[in-house]
Image (cartoon, rainbow, N blue to C red; front, side, top):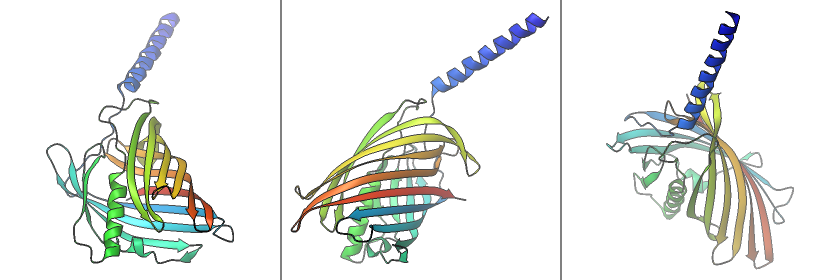
Length: 271
């Protein structure tokens, strides 16, 4: 009888292992789930530390705290949705002191209609009202370029520890001219966790970026690493983190200048 019990126990363990292996082999489908009227609010905190021979006293620290709202306005038969995205407020600190950033503040309260697929691929981004001045128009254009450059999830199921690649390119205006940037992403499903009392899938993401500033006036290089915590049950991102280190080398009338930046971002869903 004892040997029969052991055989049953071993058989049960083998069956459980086979079931676990099968579940992992089947993979996970990462997709956003849209429902008309749903509202999600996010808090995004960005800490940017920049050093350069042009910046005295150990560099410059900029901390941005942004709150935004996403409301699903319409869901199409193909599963894509039109989402109204609005920046509700932005608070900026420059070296610990309150700072008024006009390039960001002009976007506060300006709704953007974003058309997005279940995989997170953005099909279109349009402001819902005409911008009043040239500064606002430039800020809207920069935000649109930034949003359209976001990577998406694969159409097929994602396997455990099987990374997939993505690449996006975009142009952003700076005080030294437009900088054309290409970002290469590598993302992998690495496990499960619980964030804010929500079961999530953990995705590790690394990035490699390169860019050129206006007709060879400078080059941008960098890399980064972070995590995405996605609920495949709820169909939404619960939290994400990313730290990027990059160097911008530019040529000025006074000679070559190098600027190093470390940018840490944390984005979380508010309840």
